[in-house]
Length: 451
Image (cartoon, rainbow, N blue to C red; front, side, top):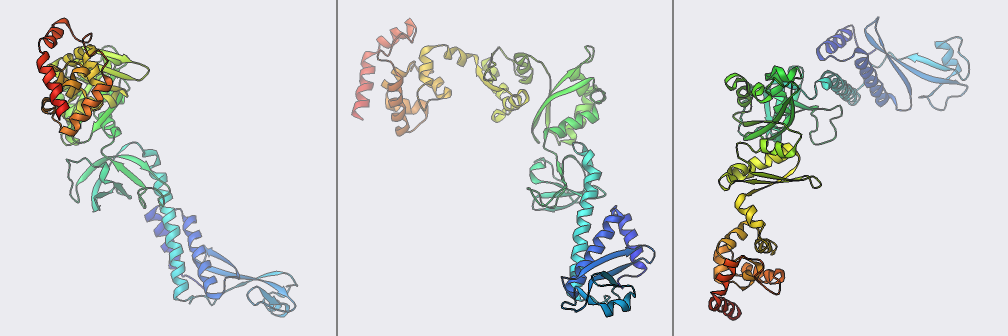
């Protein structure tokens, strides 16, 4: 006989502590005992295991077929022996016999039973956690930093642990064990045996755009009420973020609602994100107006919209170019993600240059980008033809390239240049300047030929 009266109490306690369905746990115990009995007494036996609620113990029954002559004791029983157990037994009956000598199942069988129970309990616990948190996917949860595993954070949510991966952590923020933390519940998984994060059912993030959006929903009542809507968000976690907002009521300023009195609302979000700078911009269905807002505080002179390519060419004053682009392109990159459009920011001077056919011919040369074209154009190399004929040393100095690259660019310029280098590409004043310096151009060509 397996188990005692204490088994029933153990089952009740586990179900209460772990939140596991009682029936699932009893099924796991029955399966474990069945596996252990077969390991001990033979795998071909037909075994039935039942948990007796009245006795609070496990009962094991062995079923064998009644035959005249026994060839297999594991599956057959003689009619004579069968009638000792049941006087009404007949041939071909399936006779069940309670096994009372299974208390000592042996070390291997007991270990097998233990593994089955552990496995089934883990499955049951996963189901409980999944059902508990699946409706909370996409919300913010609070927890305590439990431990660190190879850069990932294990967060105790009270009932279970969740994983905050390294790439879900804000770079600037450092937590210690025992710190309280808030994060976005990004994924609730039922099966943890596959995928990137094995053995982790709950995956958290503090770097996703949704975390920023949910923080504003918690801080701004107008968003929770549906008066103000967040139309888009983009982040570079720990550094800078942009959100676009609109209002369904004309008398409610969406930007002001998100900023709050003296910036109190947005500052609460900034503090949670450890100083991440947040730009709140008015949303507009017009992409030209939208990008004008998104690139603030930079001023915008003109926007050219290409609907087919979903591309915007934004022209800004020369002194606003670095502000519009931002440090390492951060401002324009975030604006591009916010709109979902490709954004090309140009200064007014560069845009004017691009209207000139000679400048465009420079940009068409392989190996020449707009920055290099600006330097060449400013130094008087006004067309691809003049570039092909330029002094090699001068070209190396202006373009800041080595001799091999300079020769390659000049060969590419010869390909782009028209047979008549001139002069239709430049203004009359520029044409006169070229004509006034024929000896120098000849020397340049001669120097190039000699080299």
